[in-house]
Image (cartoon, rainbow, N blue to C red; front, top):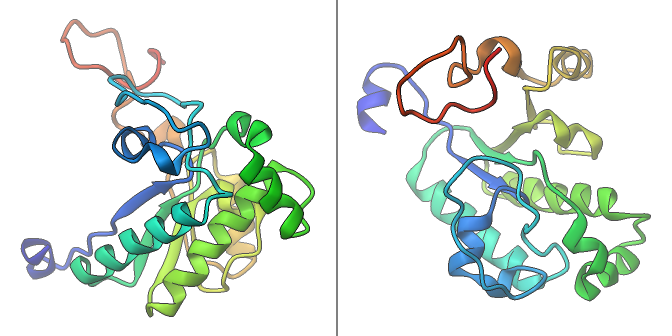
Length: 194
C-alpha cells in the first residue's frame, strides 16, 4: 500500500459479496443458507452458494471485515462487489425468507439490494464510500456510492447521468484476462476465446 501511495496510486480493496464467497463459506459454513460443508472453488465461475442474507451473524461478519479493511486501506472507496449473486439458496432459506418478510421486501432481488445497501450504509459510517459492480444500481445506495460498469457502457452512462462517480470497465474490451486468441499456454483464461 505504501509502495503504491508513493507512486500516486490508490489501492481499492474489493470484498465481493454476497455472491462469489465460496472460499469464505468453506471456512465459515455457518454464514451460508445450508450449513455446508463447502470446498473452495478451483475454477472461476458463478457459484450457487452465497452468504445468507437472512443471518444476522453474516451481517456482523461482513461488517467486521469492513472494519479490518478500513484499518488497512486508507483510500476513500471500498469495493463491495455485488455482482453475479445467485438467489437459489435464498429462495429456500427460512432465514432469508423471514428477512424478506421483516423488511417488507417483495423478493430475493430486493433482498440483495437490502444486503448491499446495509453494507454500503455501514461503510459510510466509517467515513468511506462504497463502489460496486453495476448490478448494485438496482438499489438505493448512498449518494456517494460509485459504480464500476462491467456489463457494458449503458450502466455507466446511466450512473453518470445520476451524478455518480463511474469507472468504465466493460468486460468485452477491458478484461485483459479474457482469451484474445487461441493460446497453448496452461494459464486458465476467463471465458472462451473471442
